[in-house]
Length: 149
Image (cartoon, rainbow, N blue to C red):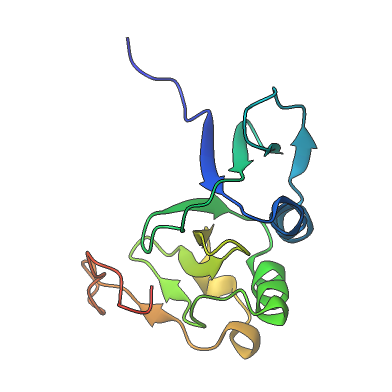
């Protein structure tokens, strides 16, 4: 039987309050009831999927990430920049015309932000788009993240 969808993603969050504020203020996620676990958790709703924040003494993986598609990428980019959360200021234009950029949450988790129309972005805010390879050319998308990630 095939899977229907991804139900949730779990990431570590040593400071649950800071991580919850990050996700609620930047993306409008809402807290939902969570069961009792032996370690503190917070569950947040994002569309039909959930983001689970768990408090454990572990480091964020360097390149593991999850992605959110947003309807106002410029606002997310601006707010993330104000918080110092942009992993790099680079915004990429993918071969299908979509845009992507990366953030780090308060726990250091890598988060990819996607938007369906790169060409609609305000270049005075996000800068020049970095074209990523495809049939139309551009830089190759690295299979491994740079050392800074």
